[in-house]
Length: 422
Image (tube, rainbow, N blue to C red; front, side, top):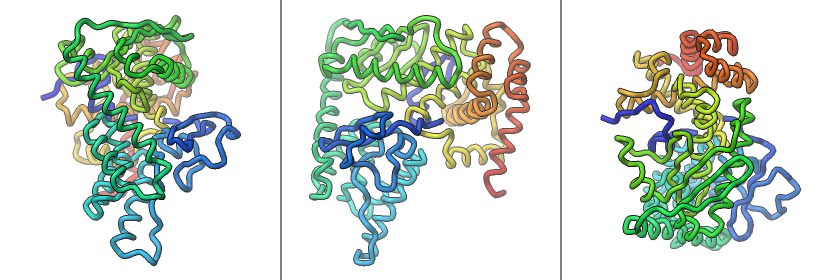
């Protein structure tokens, strides 16, 4: 049985499961080298930039810039029935990814490979999904399969696939080196709002490591401060470890896998080549850092964790809980297995893994409700009220016109109203 303590940690399964409001003015595209770019200037987007068909090029439409790759084949009448089915499945999977339905998309893409084992589009997108989940071996196998089966129409993505493969091999090499290496060596870096120390081996593996991480952190600062309506009083400390070094330093602290936590500084296990999943993790942990710095603690834990999950989702361009996640909550409500928010206020301790997953979903949905009713100014005032030792329910009612019990009841009614009665 997995025990979840009342600490602001990013649990491995929670980070893979979760991630609110996309910034529609940001644009994402892929250049001829297969490199992803982000800009808030539409004029910066080249006329020949590659993106998903039918998208406006925004972060929200492109699932945070990660759903970039070859378009699905046309399901024309000149195709066989099997080919049309495969094309429709791939197109449906991409639609699911745009909506943040990663699990549904993965199931569809795996179905494509059962029908057509060499389908390059399915291998490409499954490689992206597996990399996002930290499944490096599976991501590598899918990229190798993509390169083996890619045709002329996929040439624009071949160089990107080869670079991604090289980065995955770096991850394996770095992990092996760290497991045999000596003491941890930390290198300092800083930006206007962060003081960073990172594992020297990460910088050796990726010369632009520090610049990439500092850029992600400053992006997290702008987004999270705007969402919460409060900012840290001083620069936030961050320590970044190679994965083996993180385990060696902190594995003893937890009885379950983690990839990050906050204890006055943000501690994170990092890939050698930080990308979207690292950016999302930093958004998550920086939210915990602001919550703790502003309130002096981590409670109510459901609000703390829920706000962090929303920030993580926003970093990927996702808009709150997906429909399938809310359907899962509806099922729990109908089964009488909804966990009262009052129970989750002190922490998620004592929950088994299945219940902890539901607790994270409930926290995310409840925090989204608070955010939508309080706004940034109301959220900031709510955090300040917690810091001042005010009764939380009184402060919550002032910000949203509902206390914890009323919030939970309203949220359950809203979720039930979305779906027909079973």
